[in-house]
Length: 180
DNA sequence: GCCAACGTTGGC
DNA sequence: GCCAACGTTGGC
Figure 1 (cartoon, rainbow, N blue to C red):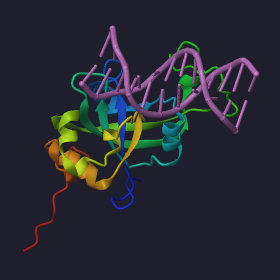
Figure 2 (tube, rainbow, N blue to C red; figure 1 turned 45 degrees about the horizontal axis):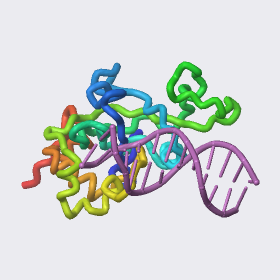
Figure 3 (tube, rainbow, N blue to C red; figure 1 turned 90 degrees about the vertical axis):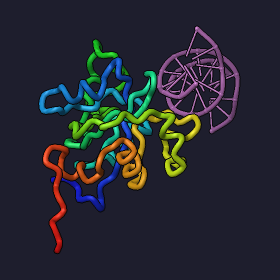
């Protein structure tokens, strides 16, 4: 089911914890939710075309003090129609989107593990090896951003996590076979 | 299809 | 709450 590590991609999903936090994700049934409400075409294109089963997600809290990476999630459902676009009572309602050709999509993610240490934005900025991260580029506002494998590795390590735990699902980390 | 006005994002 | 950056809208 899940992409193997060589073809897996990594992402950073931004959220404002006042509306939806990593803790909310963890508390959801089976720690799974639909990542809906994305209303930016570039972010939509990523969700629709490039976010695949098994991909890794850094969950980032924005508009909070301090902003930063709070946890890791996994993609468990690929692009599907985002129903909130058709709901007039939903804050993400889009009157211009037609059912015959919906504009907006969602994916499903599942919490894997919270960062052992919250990684504030300024700590990411301070790491020269992360200078190329999309998040840190001037004027960057995309809510769905690609993360390079090396950046993923660095962020997890800086957050006190073992990147190998992602493969183990965060519950029963796979151990390397002993070689003697 | 240009581009000014306006709205939103999000760090500070 | 400010405001830089950027996306979207809409008149022309």
